[in-house]
Image (cartoon, rainbow, N blue to C red; front, side):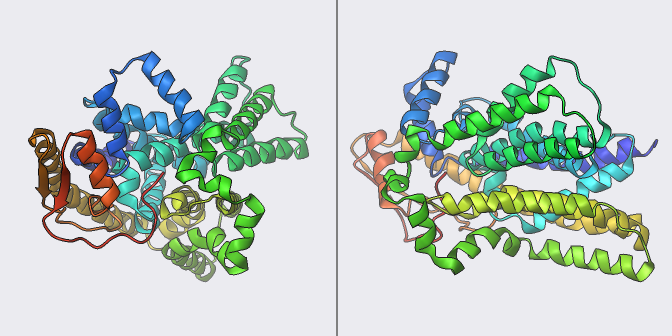
Length: 443
């Protein structure tokens, strides 16, 4: 117990420093330009934020995360301060989801579970760098996922301990449910399903579900419906959602295409599934009892439920797989971490977890230490270029990868839009760049 706080510090400190550095270096690109330009024309105030949220609900991306993204782009240190904290909190939430309680700073086993979940996400999550640092993805998906987990965790904890809460948890959970429902279209239904499943589980155990459970469910259900039916949904993606009905969209992909949408997160998770197989194999060889299988089944089912909702999405992309992959990582860590610690030893298990975490930190820092200054020089050149001139810029020296979205000015529309907003006749790149073909640049 005396060493446990030091272990937590040794785990969190380098991660936190890397997250701070990379958020500081993150360049303005792609959809971030829209928020940057918004701040050029408005001064931030509660009234301005309200008008932005209202207008996006009616005419654009209606999610809560869109407003969060605007706030993250606010001039000042806010992104650098807030985003790393939320990202660490997210992995604490995932650890709590696996344990059924909040992790303790006095328990090194809890630190190992945190490290294992982080390591599994590091090796499996697609577009990990953009999910952590590119503000339109971070605000819409990572922050939204953290809000959803904050809603789900009280249900998870109650099933473990049946701890009764005061009456004021009713309005808290109502607000939490509303926020979770508005966080994202593909996680909101899963939140509703989890709440319903926990209420049913209470009844089956002969435990009366507390009123806050129903308040949270009502909030998530109401706001989830409001998000799906938002007028802005028919405007986004050039009205793509309005051009084709839900049934027609699902039928147009065919059976194979629909299976690909639902099971894509499994493809990204193959390394985690190998780890699960190794862990279960060691348990069988050594005759160890495997705990946490029920947690794995529940979280794998929740990940699948999220993926099922993607069938309704008019636009697909790897960014949508972040939440399912994280849930599966959490579910896999629950049974295999105790097995590995008992089979190969705690030190070896720590080393297995530390390797992918260290690799993630090194690659992220090395990537954003390069593209960050390049983006800053690009922004300065655009802001100080003579009005009416044609500006020639060097492309980013690092291309599209799992860690960075890559060059955005290879798109004619993007260059024309930025040039027009800064009073330039045009923006050109000094050399051609291959155009991205995966369609995963939007929100």
